[in-house]
Length: 255
Image (cartoon, rainbow, N blue to C red; front, side, top):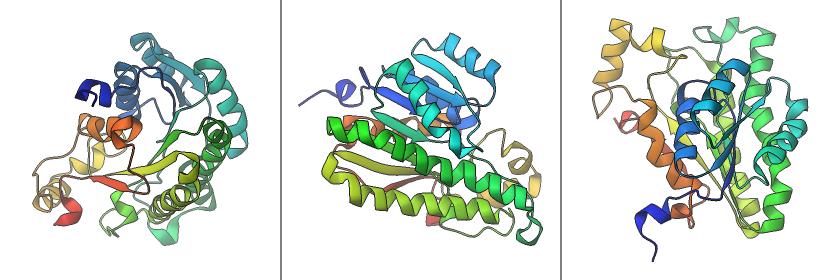
């Protein structure tokens, strides 16, 4: 039986990570690289991608805007050229038109949210599937959200919630269809945590008090709180786990 260090190792694995330039994505890039993986980091901001790659030798930048799902085949081709056939896909990129009530969301907001959060992840999974099937192994990790499970009127985000709910549902469907090929598909559902996307909201006094009063572990999450979940689902440690969503929210949804 391998020791814990080997069990969670990603040595020799090739990872495609989207949304790599900020928040969870940046931390994911660092964590995956430290665990031994070669990581194709995908994002819109070239300067930030270059900075992350410089600090993390296992990371290779792949600049792309996933609001345009048609570019996915090119993204996967460039990622494969950079790090080899993809062993682990992490669908982390996300867009939210924050603070906009459902009746006021624009067609542009709706299209961008669905394209980044749902359509591109679907096409990415389809694009990495053939190589995973051929080798008889692979792990796909979808980053969803607690809003896939709970409506939160304080934070209007209707289409974002729909996109994350769809991603959680397709996690189970892919798991059911692709397990026979050795491909595992799971999700991580973050709760309230510190990020560029949430900083202005969660530090508002009333909002902060409401979040903490309803979270069993009374603090906001940080990107580092997701290290264990990510390494578990990406590595052989979760070799008998598929179709599951690991909620990392300090107990908010259990309250």
